[in-house]
Length: 64
Image (tube, rainbow, N blue to C red; front, side, top):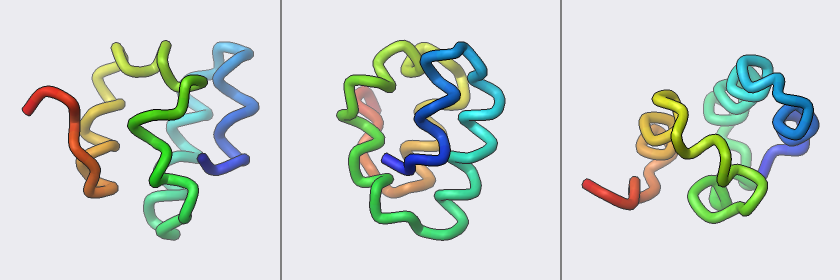
């Protein structure tokens, strides 16, 4: 998981975390491979931006 986005999630700054996740997708960061399984992202999975981001990375979205 990109280290640049992780600090924002525990503090509740979800918008900033997604901003950094978008940058990580653009840069093809290797840590994105953990996007669908990293436990720190469990609370984010209900966010409507989460699964589209997972699909952009090319990972399965767990339901479709």
